Image (cartoon, rainbow, N blue to C red; front, side, top):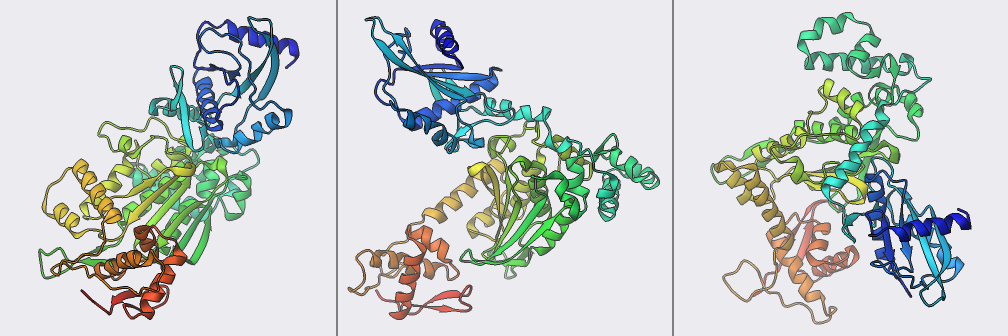
Amino acid sequence: MSKLNIESTLDKLLATKYETETIEFKEAKDNFSFDELGKYFSALSNEANLHNEECAWLVFGVEDKKHIIVGTNYRNDAKSLNSLKEEIGKQTSENLTFIEIYECFRKNAEGENKRILLFQIPAAPRGMPIAFKRIHYGRDGEAAVGLSVEKFERIRAQNVTNDWSAEIIPNATIENLSKEAIELARKMYAEKNPRLADDIKRGDDMTFLNNARLTREGKITNATILLLGKRESEDLILPALSQITWILKDRDGVVKDYEHFFCPLIIATEQVRQKIRNLTYRYMTGESIFPKETLQYDPYIIREALNNCIAHQDYSRAGRITVQEHEDDYLIFCNCGDFIPGSIENVLKAEYSASNYRNPFLATAMVNLNMIDTVGSGILKMFLAQKKRCFPLPDYDFSNHEVRMKLYGKVLDINYSKRLLNEDLSLSEVIELDKKQKLEIKTKPVKATNDPKSDLITIKWPKKWPKKWPEKCQIIYDAIKENQNITIPELEKLCDTGHTTIKKMLNEMQNEGYIKHEGAPNGGHWEIIKEEN
């Protein structure tokens, strides 16, 4: 921008009677917090998107009410000012940063030349709310505040008009597709639409693909390759990946095995499911002398969770979908991309229905093949399935622009399971019980006691140990007494202590004869040896 245009732009900004959602003035006479600057960057960028503006403006050196020129000394050297673009870009989603930072001078009321900074902030890209340090901001009056769910969803909904999964691949043909995958798709489509079964059998492949919304007017799309493409056809959608990685971890979080699976994903999903060891789980409820038996994981939930990852993956991030199987009885499904509904609470509302998807063309095809449920009911069904099994409800984590779902394959608190077994509770009541049991497990006080009637034993620990060890070792001792299968990561959380220190304390406790480890080094269990009051 030329000097004349900078001056003209500043004149227009100063002429605005009030600050707007896309214009902000700050005095910043001597300094300004970097975090505050980042918050305003995020807020102004998102508001510019919502107001159909190409950019927003943040102006330093001007009083915000009457627009009086006061001047600014913020980063008053070229090197420091130029580095600001990179610093902001490292902390924002999509690595977005200022279009430009302009420096100019204006006379104040006393005729003194004062330095002014104009930060030109780009509007958030369509469908991509911009976060600073993983938090999305918007404007509420003059303040930069957390971006409301309504505004967040309004920006995300813009993706519908720019659907990556619906884009046609110019050079792709039906020869790039797996015949085995097409046959499986026919079968699944017929099961979803039994009245069309005869027509599906008679029609040629391209007619079927068009009817199932897997292609667009006979053209191969990104969604077609993801679901039905040959392994070598993955290159057609680069830099996006059609990859699912299964990882097996032991109780200490160490990787024991892994395998990668690629397109056609309609086949890969079943291959991944078969890798997961779904053992028979037995637990006593106290209602019978016989244990209750069930599979660790409901096959429906595994299928729905995995297919949700495929349908809602943000393929622009060139990441892979992962399924972690942990030997201490839980699974974690992870896909790239922010959670469009905003929160699990929104999805579980009775009146909720999905107004948009990240990949609507892909989602429609997967619904037609009965791979996922429509109108966002899949998550609700997963919660209800865990409730019916009297198991803990799934946990969701939306940090780092990912969706991570933790699925439990065991009972955490038998009292929780007993209540679900014997009482007709609503889902909202179960959700509160589930939160309570997990909070109690996480924060349960495990401390020494002098009550001889207590199950907890007060130990006389060696005086030679470091100062904080006796307290931590007492917690470890009582935790092992309560649960022989407790893992080192669980002890780390319980003691708020690092892995190395926990290992040292366990080794010393074994050397002193208080506990012993039985079984394989990366498995097994702990046993109490010495008990003292």
